[in-house]
Image 1: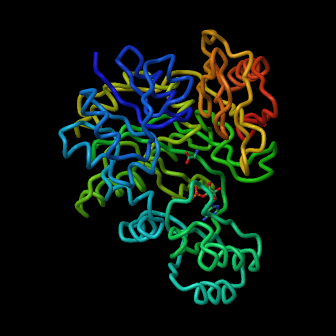
Image 2: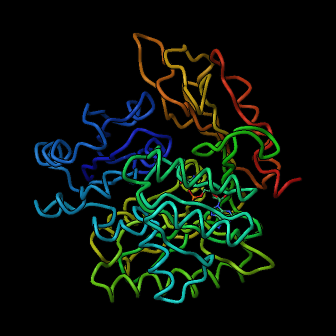
Image 3: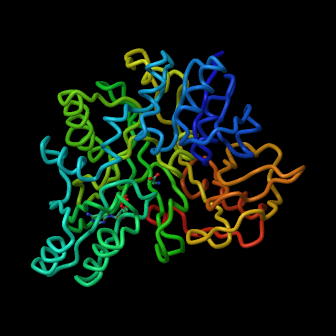
Length: 418
Ligand code: AMP
Ligand code: GLY
């Protein structure tokens, strides 16, 4: 039995903790769900010195880093400097997610298909470019903005306003000092994850997220309101092309540039007529995607994560389970603008029924009760023989859980199921 520290507090981290159950699990800072798998430690996911001290004090064998921010702050480098194995990329490799300018220029250097783009560090030049092009474009702040730094403009004026907000008003601080302006890609999106040791890549089941708050892909963008897998838009041929045209050149390119990537590589794809193009890279597992990746993996999560951390996946053999999996996010009142916390959650199953799961995100214990403590509160779902059955079972579990102001979509999986 290994001693494992999971860093983060979302449904992704609860799902990973469950995937690693049977080992001695410590989560920092965790949530009410991770408490039922192991212990929580009150150290923030962004507190690099605090996490290193915790890992040393607890003599953990492996640290699994969930969110991007500690990766871009150099948590894995700091752990490895102390001889502690960690799942996740170095600070330099995390630039693939941490800087859109780095990612776009890297893709161009290595011939990876992505939208044509320009980089600007001057607002007047950016706006002049948009007016000259005279068509709707996508404006992206260079740095991390918790998923809010991308504007898919529907008009020239909207693109210009996005530049003003990011570069002049500095709505995202220094993250908006530079912007990428790129072409709008048509097609259908998918989330493609691999686990890598720097050289080998183990592909996980292709998934699809639902970024908008409301049914029919309407309303504001969120961190993700639900996910399912497999996503039929990623046919076996598309998956092969993603591995050959995006994943392989990325791993080779990062090695050649002296920053080999270890951990998770999550390619956000746009797929048009069977051709995959790269929208963005994340160097961590997606959330809510992890809630469906975990139940769908046929194999040992500890061997997979520890193998990647060690830099050797040659002995790790995993596959994908039959059937399909679907997860629905229950979000707090006021999410995403200003989520309310402290609402009591009722109807949580003491043990999820066969094939179903309730992964906690923004939850906390308050006496005997479990209360809301963040924007996305739970990821509730099921794995079943096919996607329609998984959806029916997932929504049955959703219907039993309630809290004041709860919001959820009723159409997760619609692209595959209609
Ligand atoms: P990102 O934060 O890079 O994932 O972008 C957020 C969302 O914006 C993506 O999930 C897409 O829906 C959309 N998006 C980003 N770039 C493009 C693009 N070039 N063309 C069309 N949609 C895009
Ligand atoms: N679900 C999208 C993300 O984790 O970035």
